[in-house]
Image 1 (cartoon, rainbow, N blue to C red):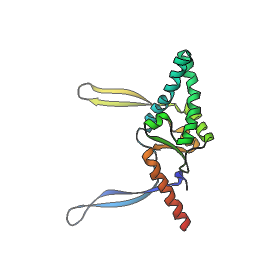
Image 2: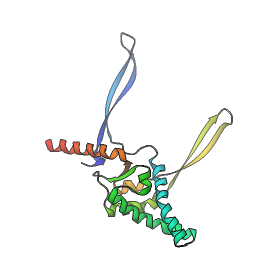
Image 3: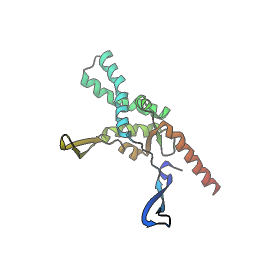
Length: 189
């Protein structure tokens, strides 16, 4: 069983226009089978900050110990973070920055990704920072109507192409338990 094949059942209650003899509203219940949602709120921002936290030690070493100029230190930090990040994701499922935010990386089977998949993920991270622009209008009593332009960087493309998932550490065991239960169900059939 794969994570991409996991489903969860949701029951949605919708109010009707009818009432029963006691005057209580009658609800219709509908059951939906939906794909299991793995992402969590704020995952993109946490992953971006985790990547910058991963870069800080390399940048400091290159700048203060090897005395490289700032721009060269920054440029040299990028491949170092990708390579070391791939190794640590393969071994422990996390990097230093992800560990601080309690994020793990797993593949479609619930295991830590292989080194080749992790390298591919980390190299695709460079192409991941494409912005999406949106406009937001806020009505305020003091200032009236104001319009803001928001830029959001999305960090999902590398996971999608490599069939990996970033999730909270607390979700890993729950997800593995769900995978084990589905495997047991399939064996009984």
